[in-house]
Image (cartoon, rainbow, N blue to C red; front, side, top):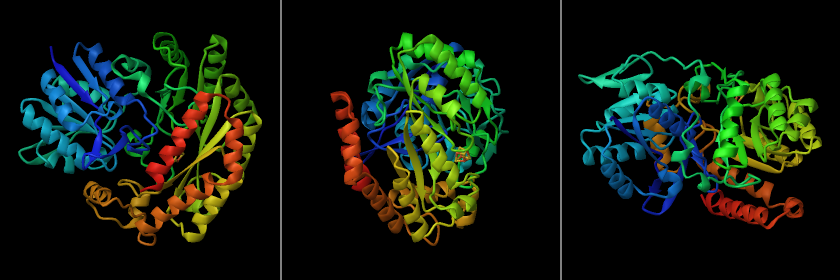
Length: 469
Ligand code: SF4
């Protein structure tokens, strides 16, 4: 029987600092306080198993397993194929890991995927230890490689030449088995905002119906297409999560759960009808949010909506083709609070057209919105995005990103230096979280010792990761 070893690697710098990556379509670094399950790996494992492949999956990132131990485990497993998801900024580490695997198991074929290697598979393939790059979603192409089929969504080298097969997307998401959560350390997954931990993630759709923001890299993965699972299929998975795994807390990983309002309405109605002991949060765009939808979300157990506000400057939003107004953001927050839910929001500093003054406006806006939580990220021009084109960065996307990652510096564009943005991020976090009014409000809302511990952990993590960098 063919054997596959799937790994979610831990990145360690100088045997000390640990970096966690979310290695899926988002493919970025996440704070150490946020330990998300590797859903794509669990989907891939489930599909392979369904086709008679023997699969082991090791979430080394969550279990804190360093490279030597990881390689020992792989040697014990003695697989025919090893699968490694990659992320923006992790490619150098992933290539190093593949070298260790190849040295220990020369006959095993090494397969890598991720938005970074989809945008440019050359770097990974030229290292000499990686046999195949999957372009886009991993499940079906991984199975194809195992079955010796190399016609779609795969890149490889032959006689020193790069071969890139055509890109396609799996259209019927209901045809996928549910993620193999039995292979994951489910109790170890924690999210700082979750009402209950452990939690898990679920994805009811893939792709973004809007797909026009110039900084957004999701199109590399989803090719401007959006696909939805049926409500029945989603409910079956939630049944399994609640009753088979005993998990009571969910995060919907859809780019925006609220885009397809009628469908979300149906999902909420079903959750209410089944009376699950479940709380959940989701990501949403501010456009088209209304009270009717928010009310049913609240009744179905939603306690928090995370909006991608991105900027507090209308001009910057327009320059980045975000397609929303500041008024829509203000209304969305007002409605969500009125419906009785928390509001968290994401902002990006250093977007196209940003300057010191608009960055200040963005942080002011986050404070004025009186959000429960805010995250501030550096807007990084990622390869294959319009933002990247406009930023005039070098052609060799992965090499440049890797280099900047090693240097611990990101530069958004020629006008804003990495050091400047780094300072702005720290200042934004300080200004938002260390306000006496904010600290007082959050302390008043803590309703249990579990919640207090979770919030203290998040605060500690904020200090040690974000602010110390
Ligand atoms: S709405 Fe969100 S997911 Fe869609 S293109 Fe914009 S940033 Fe990307």
